[in-house]
Length: 86
Image (cartoon, rainbow, N blue to C red; front, top):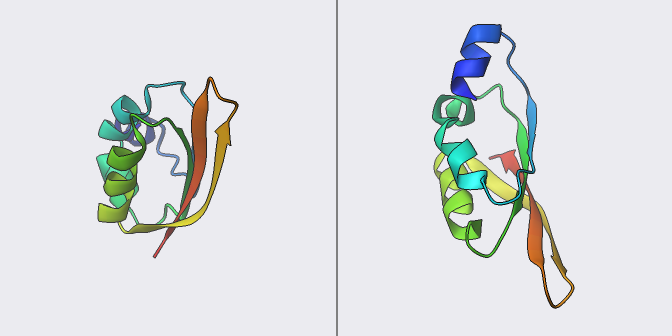
């Protein structure tokens, strides 16, 4: 994501990440983007495996959890988390 933003010279104020299990790989490529104060909020769909790492990443970048909603049908678990700038 950092490379794409640098190449396109378009900076988002909002990002949605829904990549079915590749969330951690995506956030590893957006370190500069997450630290930039122009980014106001991020929505991420996470699983049990990725939730703690993603929450830690965004908290370190200056975000807080604004809202979270858990989905669990007994077979599949995921959660949508909205992070907003502190």
